[in-house]
Image (cartoon, rainbow, N blue to C red; front, side):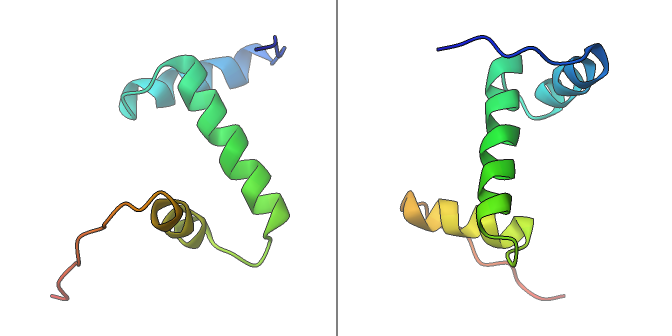
Length: 68
């Protein structure tokens, strides 16, 4: 584990997002860093595609969504 210095405004954004997403501040920051790293490594993929791949790799079954 290490220490990462970030600006006050970003820290506040992380704090707010962590509340909405039911994550700790550290977990929210780690999630954003991981998604950002994956997005840089795979620039042609959308956020939804990145998340779908992560869920598949973790063997998480996602429910089908019925079309309206």
